[in-house]
Every structure is written in C-alpha cells, then in structure tokens.
Length: 211
Ligand SMILES: Nc1ncnc2c1ncn2[C@@H]1O[C@H](COP(=O)(O)OP(=O)(O)OP(=O)(O)O)[C@@H](O)[C@H]1O
Ligand SMILES: O=C(O)c1ccc[n+]([C@@H]2O[C@H](COP(=O)([O-])O)[C@@H](O)[C@H]2O)c1
Image 1: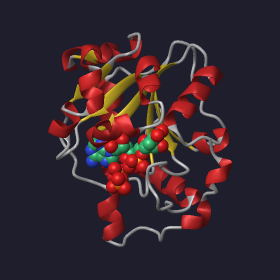
Image 2 (image 1 turned 60 degrees about the horizontal axis):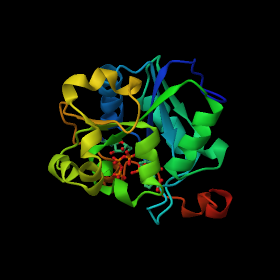
Image 3 (image 1 turned 120 degrees about the vertical axis):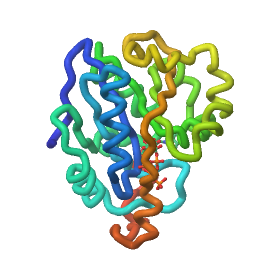
Image 4 (image 1 turned 30 degrees about the horizontal axis):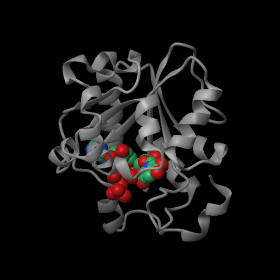
C-alpha cells in the first residue's frame, strides 16, 4: 500500500498500533479475530516510528513495514506508515489527526491485554477512552492484570460485554470491550531474542521531529 489508506464514511476501521519489531503471526491472528468480533470493515496497522514509553529505538521503519506486509496479507487489512506521515507517535495525537482527516469514519483502537495494563501511563489516555471505542484482545499472562488495571477500573461503567462486541464500533465512547480468543504466545521480544530479526537502529528516529 502506498500513500494514505482509504476508508468511506460510516465504515468501521480498527487501528492496531505497534512497534511490529518484528511483526508476527500473533498480530495477524488478533487482527483477524478483531475484524470478526468487533464487526470491522477494515483494519489499519499503524507501524510506529517508536513507542514513546520505550527507550531503545526499533529496527528501521522500512524493514518493519516490509516484514509486516509479508506477515499480514488480507484484502481488508492495510499496513501503514500513517504516524510517520502525520509526524505523531503519541496515540492520542494520531487519533485526533485521523479523526479530522477521515470524518465519518468510526475508528476502533485495538490492543492486546498487555497494553491495557499500561494504558493509564499513555499520554491523554482518558481522552482516548472518551473519544474512541477500544477493543482489547486477550494475551497469555495478561488477562487478569488487564482486568484489574487502572484504566479498566476507572472505566468499568463503559465496559461492553463480550457478547455485544459486534456493536462496539457503533457505540458512542467511552466504550471498551475485552474479548477472549484462542491465545497466541508469539511476541516480538522472543523473536528478537532468537536473533532471527534485524539489529536495532537506535539512530533511526529523531524524537524532535515527532509530536
Ligand atoms: N500474541 C499476542 N496476543 C495478543 N496481542 C498481541 C500479541 N502480540 C502482540 N499483541 C498486541 O499487538 C499490538 C502491537 O504489539 P507489538 O508490536 O508491541 O508486539 P509485541 O509482540 O507485543 O512486541 P514486544 O515483545 O516487543 O513488546 C499490541 O497492542 C500488543 O498488545
Ligand atoms: O501514546 C502513548 O503515550 C503511547 C504509549 C505507549 C504505546 N503507545 C502505542 O501503543 C502501540 C503499541 O506499542 P508497542 O511498542 O507495544 O508495540 C503503539 O501504537 C504505540 O505508539 C502509545
């Protein structure tokens, strides 16, 4: 995919942000499940210029994009460098700009349970909860911690039961839903440790160029 991803008014678009350093079958698996369970028309992978909470830079963007496209081949899923184009790396900033750029599109932020546990540390995380529906996918080892996380507790009144997950993208935020699924123990950390992925390129990102 070259250029900006496409979506029509009224479409439900899931956004899976990640370092994808490297992408793996676990990412593809949760994407397919999210499309089905949350009734999404499309999913865009947002390959991050760099997680603001991680100090080490990831492998070069071009390598991560190429690998992500190899791993995720589906007609309704697009691997994108939207955050590089927008010059954002904080999710709230990215979402504000995407919502302005794609009026009428219903975005659903997707993440694994490990990220829900950390969510209260993200910049403007309450703004995200208040403005975008959030779909959380179970991940081995993180189910309980995610359920008791500050974000889950503070927004417990906005939790959508898993049996109603298909309507998530139509709901007015705050609305978030946790779904169980056949678990995948794949992780980028394990792949990096196994040495099957490229060396890190800590100098690839100039943080000053990003908001
Ligand atoms: N096996 C998995 N099951 C459920 N969610 C996952 C899985 N792997 C990744 N995710 C989710 O996909 C998103 C992007 O993940 P990311 O690119 O950080 O991969 P990762 O395997 O978690 O990497 P790392 O090991 O470096 O933290 C995150 O929301 C993460 O929670
Ligand atoms: O906005 C934030 O403060 C923030 C903090 C940590 C992670 N994120 C986003 O969470 C997504 C998953 O990150 P990662 O590195 O765990 O793959 C990715 O899109 C990051 O930009 C966002």
